Length: 371
Image 1 (tube, rainbow, N blue to C red):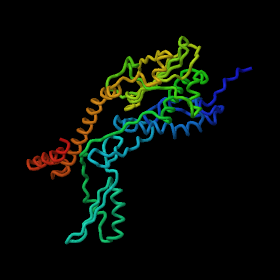
Image 2 (cartoon, rainbow, N blue to C red):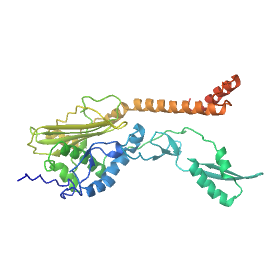
Image 3 (spheres, rainbow, N blue to C red):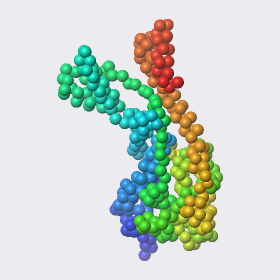
Image 4 (tube, one colour):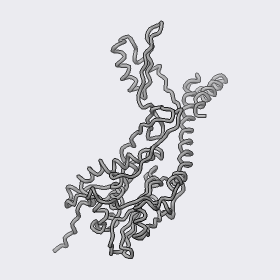
């Protein structure tokens, strides 16, 4: 007679998980670069609902950082983000860190020679759609000729980009707890042992089982200038606590208590990645807190003045340097391509002195806005 496998119930709704309703729950939200997933943790329904609410809220809060650091998602693309600069410009930030106008523009002016129409669009397809509407009123215009003569212009924002970062809240808090809970189950800890996490995920009125922590750096082997994601758990029979630590982009740092009265074997597990590449990082994380320290963390007493700013300050030089180098390389490549196409020389020909001077002038012209 074979031994019956233990029941596995959904960590959120408690329904029995089977082959039909099982799901892959990402330990780190896939939208911010997570790869590792856990089966037998939550059912498909709860995966979908929590993904559209809890995880979506967390991803929305972290979107400016996802764009700033260039997250490499396993599938899909990081959505763009509307922003307004300090100069009042309405722009949209792209996944590569660049900007486009938030909307196209259209203007019409009467001149002695007729009507002058100016269209600014974000793509040729968008420009064609606008011109199709214009042609209904002015049927003699030649859309193909207009698009052939259209210019691609790159400019930089006049003002500075300002992001109002938001951390925490009911939905994103439950997403963070779910991540640490998922890793605990992946490490072999039973769901029922994580009673604090179970209660918080199932009871909308439950007290949060986490708090923000910046008093010390819990990562002993932190790689410099890496905006890492980290989920770590430690279940200790000596303290009876199942603790967790979640860090996103090196700046959002959260300590959790998933369960109390634990009496099993000592269990430690950590999953960390560089979200810019999706590559795993080997980290050593220490989460040895006492009950009193956990309560202090919950009461926001472990956030020294300037600690969050300091965490950002350690990452920003690398961000600025990488973005500068990427933009420099793009501008140089575009400038050379433009100059070669417009200096008068044909492919395979030896460039004349006049063409070389024109080539130099065109490159300088294209490089000037960047310089």
